Image 1: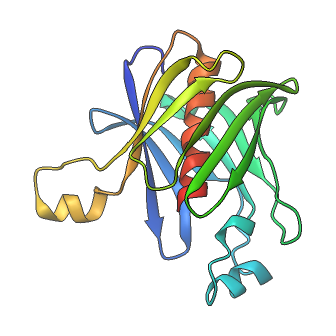
Image 2: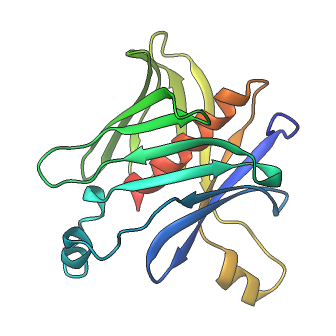
Length: 193
């Protein structure tokens, strides 16, 4: 799916109902989408969020699709007030392939991805950074850098409509790893927004 490209741009779309859609772009051309499966926006957490920022307590359930609407996988997080919830990544057959555990403080972000209860990669960074180094959890060697940037469009109107910060990621030869990198961008967007 995404192995034909060198770099992907994962960009959220903001609606009045909240962030419910992301697109995966290559040279400003859509090659994939991430959409919510079901929305329960009118729950108690949503009503409280109108007055207080409680977005970290939201639940979400995204489906990731490539070109031709082929399902690649799912990204899920349960909501709740009293316990920080992990974020789970499932393949297209709804089998668990990775878990994201996170710790978020005012200026620090710690995000670790686990496969089969083994840490694979992590991000330890500030919350106001533009570049998020993805490093191997065991060797501390850099894998790649996820870059948060705004795209530049030709007209002012396009910039206002589509110029929302997104994440640039390098692709690999592995479809699963590309999917996990896209999931990492979704998790970063969730934690940083």
